[in-house]
Image 1 (tube, one colour):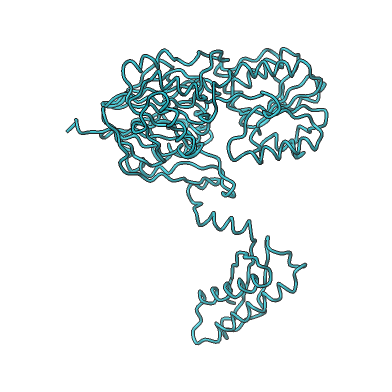
Image 2 (tube, rainbow, N blue to C red; image 1 turned 90 degrees about the vertical axis):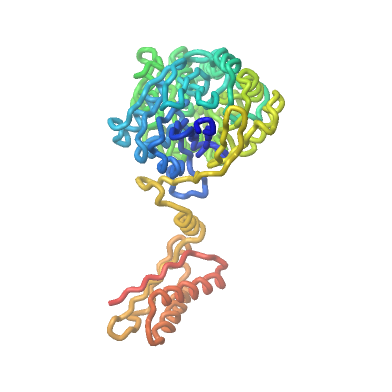
Length: 555
């Protein structure tokens, strides 16, 4: 019977999208999970804070799960953990900085004491049940302590690259362990799962060190105050900004909650080294001349509540941007954020500040491998099967085509979707069915209580506004006490549209009288009559469709 068992690879999030990365590997009665991320809401999700994975299948099979293995500490790989662990409490394996960030996240959810965290180093191997062993392998990315995972199973080894690039001059730690990937290739690899984010870009990703050199040259010739926005999690980038500031006699202040948290954790764990006296509190920046200060801030993606956005719109309590400031946006917009970033840049230009961003100067490099690196890793690992991951659909298809160029036949490459089940043994692989793998919306403390109907209503309200019709009916004689009252929100301003509102009152009254004239009064029918009559009247007069909410009171 054991010989007929197959390995099932089940991506639950992270395919056909950027974010929500979570993949399950199932063999027999055991499952291991790689990453547990979240995604930011789209523009058509008003009020939603974050998007996490639908883990219905994993909850149903929770007794099989041996642990979660993390590749690195970015939100799209660890952001869903607190919500997952509330449902399924299993050990979490990760490197030092990754688990440092996880600890902070679990503290915020009051869960730290109840979760087992297992710290791993690159080169170490963890046993996960009787069917899986997981080896951690050094990679380079835009956050320290990133790893790939070699997952050994009874049918063969799966290499999951996580997010990666080749950086021969990393700021902290070692270069990606290409030797180990070559050794695994010689031993034999059943399948390679590789990051597709930059598959459209030819050549190689530039080294992180090149950004530090650029900062150095900008700082040395600048007599303005410098404000730099970058990803809080890019510890290497923040370190280089601090180094350039110290070299040029500037103090550094940090703005934005996530930036403050990560700087604190990185210093505590030794991933960031700050020269004595360089770091100052944001409250003290006015004690120094502008050319003595650098502010590192969040907001490189134009997030509405981020520190840089508040500075741009003159809404920050401690920092006021002036024409004497130099703003550097050291990041590329994540797909979907281009408009938000553009709005922030435009506002900064309106203030008169000097703004440097990626279109003008190389102040950002990607943490993801480009085409030549992607081909190199496939050539080293020599997988029997290839599975492109971490990308939108076009990225996955293009990565499959790229793999063909280095000898992977198209029938041995699988472009999967979230929920696809890929079954493999030592010599064959095929897609066999699907599992539920949608998205769950988080709004405040509510997890999953905002669904399609609520979103539809929110969009309706945002686009067309709301009309509330209040009807009061006397209990004893079943007559209207007074003319209906009409409240408008986001549709028209009542005082400027009196004729329209009077018409709504008249139409509502007619609909109510029509219902009251019948022998038995059905409140649901009355509401429906008011709704349809008012909707028709408003559309005829305005060609608009506000949400109509009838309220009937009995007195």
